[in-house]
Length: 508
Image (cartoon, rainbow, N blue to C red; front, side):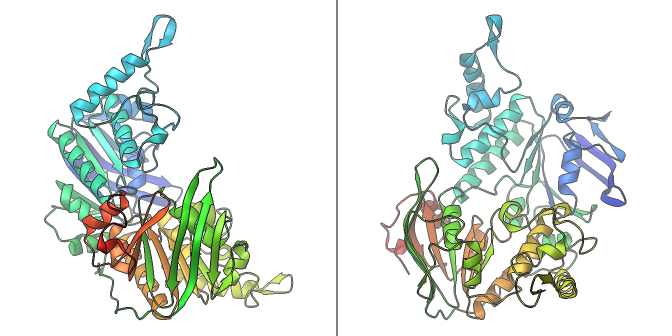
């Protein structure tokens, strides 16, 4: 099925999110969509999937205009979408999730789970998506959960499949498997719109690459285009894709974790006796697939979660019982992985969020009164320095794009003197130009003598920034290695293979 977009425009008041976008997705084509944050990619996809209605323009399927008022209309027309955050019911089986909304029944409307499992098994075999129909979704690895999402779309006979940032939580091996699945779908005639910010991936899988900048299509390129060329099209200027850094000269340990154990609400140990040290003037990268204890470990360092065993020390002082305010006062900077939950207050303005953990400082308050002139001056400087794209400093942060929300958090944490910087997924949802800037600032912080801890599921980011890499699997650090290690070796460790048995998996 051919999908054609003609002059599609979407306005929100005076703001134009998509401006006269025209492009075509051919049958059996993998069409990659690149663009920086706020470029309009999500708005465009939401119009294709019936979540938004265009202000102008039209959508055509096989040359016939279509009008969607809901995702149901898009699904009926043969368009499926796999969202970045999976839309699965964890306590349901694979078959129950895939058949949700189109349940298989027998007499008197009784659910026929056997028939549903048979249908899912047939889809799995046809599209080479190996999944057990009877498995509970909550017990599946994220890579397999993603297959379930794809099966949901294919069960609705999708001819065009939209994949929104599909590799964000996958290991290198799972990404390779997804690429093979995409090639198999393409061979069977399915058209795929692949949204990603990872230049390496679009070059590996794309047939054509369309770049959107500030709501407009700025060009279409073949996969033979260089990463540098694609990055420049995205940002509108030359971008360095390599982190320029000197060899680290680490000093004494600043932050030490000693036998940290965290037990969740169900009584399961999610962090299991983890010990490490972060030294002055170095970047310690923590690699791992999402959900292996990194989140709980980092929160225990900040006092957001109290460890059930072990100690956290800063400059030799035990801060294990401290809350977040006390931990920040000890000189810890924190860029959280979930910015909307832990990084900002959505209803507060940009200027207010830029001093959210600083407003008690003498610079911004006097007694019970805020120094509004100083807060305004700080906001103006940070907005310019970090290129925060906002109408003005009084705009609520909730109305900004995800990447600009992240810039607000990063700008705030870099605006004070730090002993330790803890950054969890620091460039998640951030465009390539902003990634370049944030990486540069992280290395500058390292070179000031700050101990930096980076947690990332992006191996490119881990390799680019780290002086040492600790790999987490199943709540444990299974090895600490040099960034000279092969990507494949890190991938095996992230999957729990050969942990701490090879020479290169020992502490360095």
